[in-house]
Every structure is written in structure tokens, then in C-alpha cells.
Length: 295
Image (cartoon, rainbow, N blue to C red; front, side, top):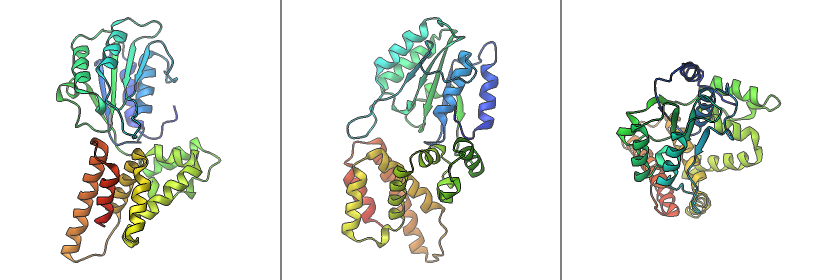
């Protein structure tokens, strides 16, 4: 498992997995995108199964549920059928491992009926069953599900851990060639992606640089950038989130109260735009256009 950071959480989970009887049948991992929640969940599942941290994918007693992606780049809801299948899977005793484990990624995408089905699984758990839910947003999950699971909150990873982890995973790469800004975001998936595919990351970095100088672009340049971003919604959301983090972290010498208030209103508008792109079926191009025209 090429995991960067989260040493305290991983130690705690290893301790739980080593117990003869687990104190919980359900675990809820939640926190920002790209920090490594799913990898830690896989590692925990492996220890619960008795594989000592070995990749559990492909094992008979491990089932992963991942929402499909729509043609427009958005994520489909996890259907009730997937949870019913998981319930059947968990109702059987292990074929070769200590337990049976279901890992549900992007659990915030569970449909209403899927959440109902999951509650039924929670109510009558097989003693050898374990469910791990991984979500980047807690808000869509019912309190009745959240309250019945052992909650494991994740945060971003420190810059020191990111640098040492990147150096360990990519010993021949020039880790220091990456701008400090990207380490400040605290997301291992970003750093791993940057060092794994430098060409793709270069294009992403160039777009982000353009976002930071958006106020100096002409109207036609802004609209052209909006058109390009709206062509890949997941990438657009990712870049806009990084841009917002960077803008919030930048120091300003502005002392005019009206201009400061205007700046913070834009932060709110940008955050609302990101939320709209992520959680609704709104026209991506129009949403991004509105954001760019407010700069």
C-alpha cells in the first residue's frame, strides 16, 4: 500500500483489526478528496481479512462498490441493487478469510433507496461482516447511518509527510521541482499524479496558473478558458477547488474595507459555484462563465 501520511489513524486501525472480535461492524471514513482515505480503507480491510496489509482486491471475501461515471463526467448514484448484492455477500460466511468486508467508495453517492437497504444490513449484521464507507462529503449521508458507524475523520497531509512520502515512492524523481503551493494543498493523490505523469500535470499546472491571473484576462480569454474547463467536469471541479484554496491562502495588502468585502464575497461565490457543479445537474459552462465574469 503506497500510503502517504495518516500514521496515527493507520496505527489505530491496525489495533482494531487485531482484536479477536471487532467492536464495530461498520466504519465511516470521511474527509477531503485526494488525501488517501480509500487506500487506508483498503489497508484496514486487508488487516481485518487477515492478509496483513496485502492488497485485498480480487480476494473472495472482499467486495468493492464504486459508483459509475456518467458521460458528462458526473458520478451516478449508487443504486439499491448494489447494496442488496452487498447484503447477500455479507450474509454468507467467509470462504477463506477471517471476515467478509464490503468497501463502499464515494458513499455520499448512495441513493435514498440504497441508504434504506444499507440500514437493513446494519440492523441484522452477520457476526463475520464488516462494512467500510468512504466519503468526501458527510452531508448526504443520513444521521442514522453515520451514527451507527465508527467514525474516522481524515484531514489533509502535512507538507513534511508529503515530501518524505513522495521521495520514498519516487526516489529518482526531482520532488523539489514541484512548486511549494502543491504541497501546501496536503493531497497525496495530487503529488503522486504529478510525479507519475509529468506531461498531464504540466497541462494542469498551466491551467491553474491561468486561473490565478484571471483578472488580467480579456472577456474572450475568460470565456475560452471556461469552455475548455467545462469539457471535463471532474477536472474543472478539482482545479477550481485548488484555486480557491490558493486564493484563500494568499496574503493581501488591501486595506479598503469595500474591496476586502468584495474579495470575500467572490470566495463565497466560487465555493457556491463548485458546490453547484459537484452536486447538481446545472450546465457546467454557464456556472463557470458566471464565476469568471465576477472576477
